[in-house]
Amino acid sequence: MTEHLDPIRLPANQPPQFYRGGDAIARLRGASGSDSKFGPEDWVGSVTTMFGQETNGLTRLPSGLWLREAVRGNAAAWLGERHVAKLGDSTGLLVKLLDAGQRLPVHFHPSDAFATQHFDSHFGKTEAWIVVGTYGDDPRVYPGFAETLSKATVAEWTREQDAPSMLGALNSIPVRAGDTVYIPAGLPHAIGEGVFVVELQQPTDFSLTLEWRDFLASPEKGHLGIGFDTALETLDTSGWDAERLTTIVKHTADDGAESVDLLAAGSGAFFRADRIQLTGGAFALDPSFAVLVVMDGAGTLRTERGSEFPLAKGDTYVVPFDAGQAEVSGAVTVIRCRPPAPEER
Image 1 (cartoon, rainbow, N blue to C red):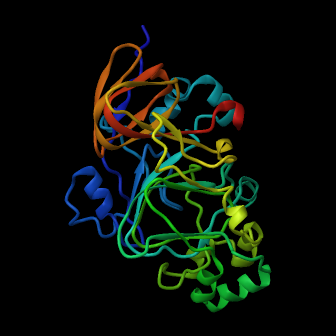
Image 2 (cartoon, helix red, strand yellow):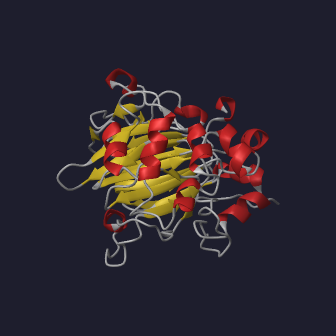
Image 3 (cartoon, rainbow, N blue to C red):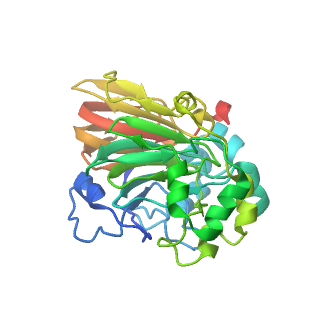
């Protein structure tokens, strides 16, 4: 008799980073913030390692098994046969809690085609941010250049490490909880101090960092060994005016529906995210691999075979496809993150 898979509650997984932050993650999880100054990212349900590392970044299940190995050993049950037919035994998704305790550097990520050519990876790194909290005087994000630039100009800024010009050329957008920003591969961007996000991305750690000085140890860590001239081939230097930004930025804070589709159109080929917000009822979840982040309240996650799991603020769960038609109930707010639907990829 085949043993069915159930959702698994995950502990925090905060590999060391080069920038400050983490107190907002500690507050969400109800943990002490004293050790979180360089724990600004919590990699949830991760089958991805940090660039060039063997295990840092991977999620270890309470059983002691790496999630990556569990999925590879039983991919159809974890992911569903249609997912496996499209994306193989990768979850196709990395979810992070990211708390920017300082401004992040100006950087961008490769497309699938570029990653295949230069990093031997089927996946590039398209991503999206769901703002779940802010603090400080002026929380904002910086997506895309406001005006079209030449690659020669950006190359000069990179050689000179002209951070004011790099940052000044980007759009600067104030944000609040409920705002979401879709970041296609190639789009230059930064996240400002005081912005706490649930981040969805393709399952890689390819960050091409134009503004490396004062953040990274060397320019090689900025271009990941391929050289900035090559890296700039995948950079989007086109202008993103206010009208164009509306295609990647959404404002969802005032949407009180039980289920809110959080991300901009076009992102569905890479991942899906919705906010489930209940005041005492129940909401059905179609069978799918998913990562759940409980933002507030308390409730219950129930599988179609009757297994029940408590949901409380700060909990994170990985849900296998094999859990079947599940249900969330209670007075609870949950962000559900999923890979692309098989027909979208």
